Image (cartoon, rainbow, N blue to C red; front, side, top):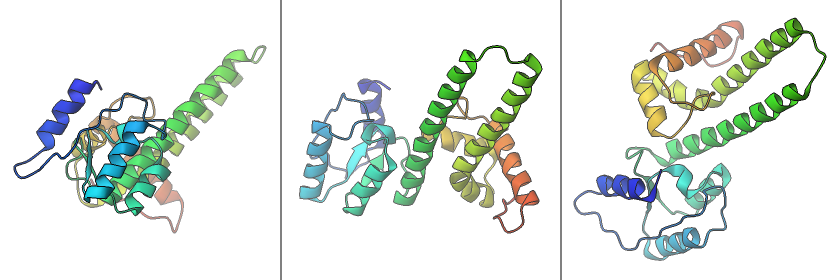
Length: 206
């Protein structure tokens, strides 16, 4: 998302009575936490007991430990893309996004390793790939379960859950956008686990 789009989201977030006391523009990647403008914004917010308003959570940081640390210092965060998100929800979204990036990296490494292999029977490769994809899909379903469960138990529709995940900037296991069917498949996968394993938390009806 470009700077103009981020500014537009921030302006749309602001309501009557809100006061912007300072603006900080950071062009470095959200992967790094040693950004000059980031720390200036944090220091300014702490000094004036103000919140930090950002367009997207990953523009603040892509590390859940860093975001949690800032929250523990009593500095409030507001995310324009998620205007009603609580601190707890922001923490969950950050954890999910971090896990998603780990899975993408893992899938990339596995794909490269597979591409380097030679002389293995095609049928065995196909079976191994299918099993690996199933495991990856299940791992992703588990990673996103903490945010899906509250919405499912609250009776949200699959479409509403998909919209919420997309607004949070979370991608699917294939690095795409969520649809109602995608969410339905993930919920179905999690329900199968809960049916097979006694003692695990069960999902409600959507």
